[in-house]
Image 1 (cartoon, rainbow, N blue to C red):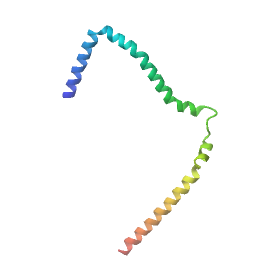
Image 2: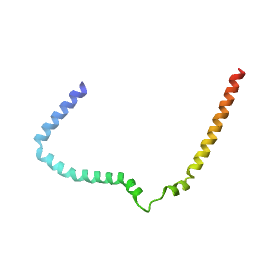
Image 3: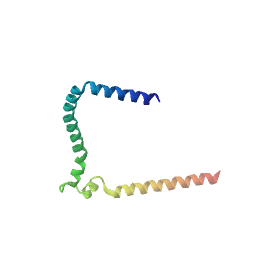
Image 4: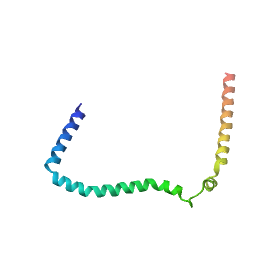
Length: 100
């Protein structure tokens, strides 16, 4: 409840401040608007850069990226190794349970 009342009071004081200082408020807004557009445009360009880079015809193909990082074969081989290790440990656990 305190936060709500504080928010209502702050909004009311802000409204009174804008009405009392409308000229300087417009001056501040006129100066801040180009800065907001500049920063917003730079952020949008930065976020869209990867999407544009992927669509370019001279970008790396997926096959060359896979060969660069070892491809799927290395991942499958490692996964198989971990599966065998898990099966071995499970067999040891079952053997230990049977002995007790």
